[in-house]
Image 1 (cartoon, rainbow, N blue to C red):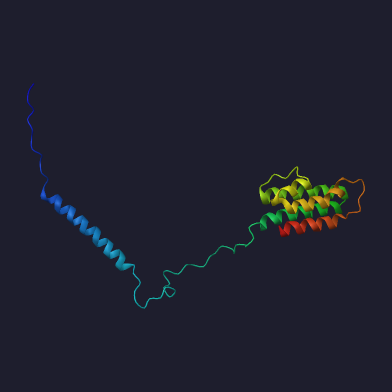
Image 2: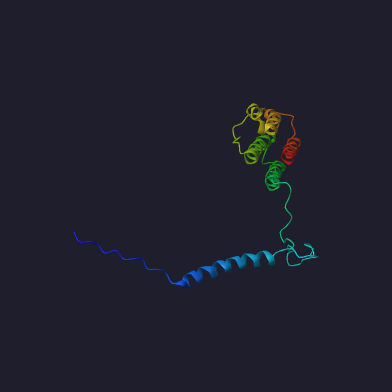
Length: 166
């Protein structure tokens, strides 16, 4: 087996040492310039600087109530039920059934709990749906009785109040 001739490693030129040193000095100089140029200067007030002042917002003010839009939708639905009752499309029983449907849908949107088949007792068992439980209990008799003395306008008012306060 022939012997392999070993060759000494080739050294790098001194220019590369100089390039590395210059790059390290440039990096250090950049950091010095960065901290020096962004420091707070004596006598400079933050609010007085117009360049750093935030522009006025062009967006409309945000409502503090995150459920305002949802409430508006379901209150409009209650108004639609009232209008249908006035036109004679719904009798008192139909109004109460529609209110129950709207309240269950509002509960689903508001809490994330599917309340489509909830009775008043079911809603009372779940702490998040307590306002629905009271409403369903008040609407149960007028919804299922053959004849009821409950006034649709009063039931609509109570349902509207629950939606506005919840």
